Amino acid sequence: MYIHNSPLAVRYAETDAMGVVHHASYVVWLEVARTEWLAAQGYRYADVEKEGFFFVVTEVNCRYLRPVRYGDDIVIRSHVAEMRSRVLQFAYEVVNSATNEVHMTATTRHICVDRNSRVTKMPEYLLKLYQAMQTE
Amino acid sequence: MYIHNSPLAVRYAETDAMGVVHHASYVVWLEVARTEWLAAQGYRYADVEKEGFFFVVTEVNCRYLRPVRYGDDIVIRSHVAEMRSRVLQFAYEVVNSATNEVHMTATTRHICVDRNSRVTKMPEYLLKLYQAMQTE
Amino acid sequence: MYIHNSPLAVRYAETDAMGVVHHASYVVWLEVARTEWLAAQGYRYADVEKEGFFFVVTEVNCRYLRPVRYGDDIVIRSHVAEMRSRVLQFAYEVVNSATNEVHMTATTRHICVDRNSRVTKMPEYLLKLYQAMQTE
Amino acid sequence: MYIHNSPLAVRYAETDAMGVVHHASYVVWLEVARTEWLAAQGYRYADVEKEGFFFVVTEVNCRYLRPVRYGDDIVIRSHVAEMRSRVLQFAYEVVNSATNEVHMTATTRHICVDRNSRVTKMPEYLLKLYQAMQTE
Image 1: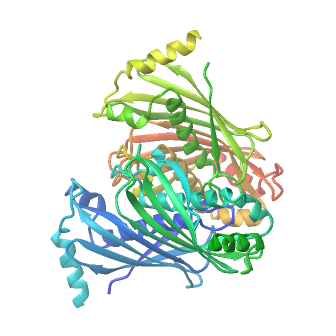
Image 2: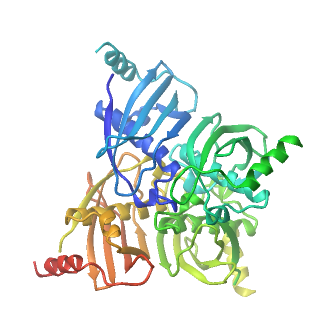
Image 3: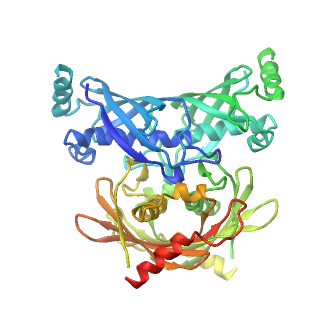
């Protein structure tokens, strides 16, 4: 199973008055992580959209274990947990790269739609990519 | 069971290039909704914090059913699904107030901590409030 | 000169680790304020866009005088400082409604473009509205 | 004059329903750029804060020249335009690294305060750094 590591610097704007990263900021980080997962496979999500495929988020599930603070060095570990012709699931761990502690885990689900928001089969190259990962 | 209705105007900044509300924006809306739930009971969350109680988010679970667009009139229906001495769970529905369609559902979990981030019993008035709601 | 008052509750997500509202959050508030200015005149910005007029932001200038904290009750006072056929300028004051102190001032400039991003004359009803305000 | 180049990938969450980056998102980018300017000199802003120095934003001035779109490769060019004992000004250009076109320019001003929010002289090493840059 391929796990992509996305290093990430906490932005001050992502913190809140409790002195830690606000829980909604992580949801944006997950998006960054899956975009980088895809880029690491050689595909830019902006190009996937230009081809007429859009991955709509249908579920987000987050578990917050330990707060992340401004100045912490973070890595997001992401992998594809499931891929079927129209559906995709990612799983993530937000890890402190100094301590190796897991601060947050999450999963997201996505369906593939076309320009008219109709559910559609995702690009063949993504399905093949996932199959290749499974048999490695 | 008391359900609070929070009317909400979509902010342009909350939309994304797909022309709809970005999935992370809803997570901020849930926070607005539970703050308004509390305010409707006569408590300001800013005051609860001044007393030394902080409700840390430990879980966020979102199901996105239909996109919300800029200009849609939204109501967030929120209620307390569970309250024990140290733990709290909210449940939410994001509803289009013109069509009455549910666009998104969510739950969030929280633990109560003190100024030193130690898990603590939440204020008595909140526990009593919930008990009173249960027996109504 | 018509000044619109937009009451606003600080969202926790808008604060940062310094314990105050993050400076970028105010920029979103300005957008809320001018949308409400327009709504108070009887126009919804979502409808203006549907007619094919888009007000692109070309300038934002912010002066931060005093921090705003979570729990502060805020009013944003906004007015149109200039309106010509293609250009619009708003001016704003972020005021603490309990103390009446001004916490922040700002101006924003906008040009009107059509669906193809070409600069265009803004809707006649907006120009007339402004002229009427000038002669009041 | 030292100019720092911060490459930046547009986040989907930073776009809006006009299909371009929302104007408030750039304000967060400027913060990222000045943090990276500082890091390139060998200082982490998180450490500066731990020493008891906080750079409060007092002004933000933005000029938006051309929209940035999701998928655009961006570089933010930042430099210190002024530094006196208590005051600091940064200037920025948001540049498309493929076309070299400037999409946005900005300046921000900051004052240095201590833990009690009192205006204070900034760390000596920053003043020396700036003086060294001036004489290069």
